[in-house]
Length: 316
Figure: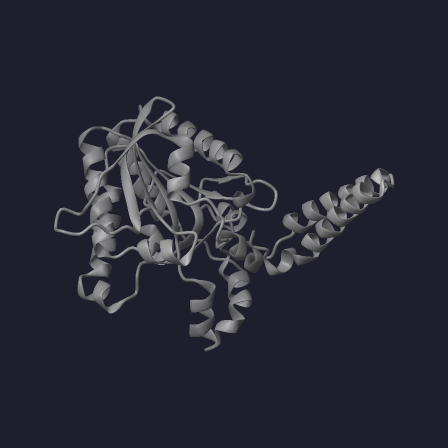
């Protein structure tokens, strides 16, 4: 398991507890009282640690290599998933995956960005960075859902749209812009969840939604802290300062009315309990779907438009 830098003191405590247990078993000494005391102290320290994370530490959790990805959620919250491939112009971007599924008996269209958990997988999924054909595929699935009156769910975890030359040559900006425009006009409920990284237009191209939720330790931002620091200070090492200033955490964005709710994560992050976070995500998403599925399409579109027009709060 990957141990993050700020988690090392906690890991060392847990290692000491494990050593005490091994000594107790091998020597026959009864040190259960001491072990229980240390475990209690470790749990209290863990709660305090994760209750006071800095934005930079949250980013580390959001980028954790063991964090559940889109296909993990598909296995845990849906049934009868049928993937729909391709943008109908000859390509199938694997950084965006989508298809038809059922969640608690409700037919939905579910679409998301996909990251790998090791280098080999990340090469297949382009590290979760979609190219224009990925956004065109997503748009095709949005329109399919609209035609057949299916609620749309998007799960977003991307460091941003792919910035390579080929993507720019094939109209990356246009593909994202078209998605923004067309999502605003959809006649069906759209629910978006930022599950990890939500960076720039690459995330927004799937997030023009009636309800936008974030996992507790996810982040959502117009630019990565590293990119911001490189522009403002010509020094990417000041990413921690940028992360603090950008107001990118779930709590900050809820206060600014950018998102509609926070999905609580297991202590230590979503990677510690896939089942718990999947249940929380499914409950939140389906509650929103049930609230919106009987709303008239004209009202949905008006509310969605006004939701995004209201965004923009000046902070002192």
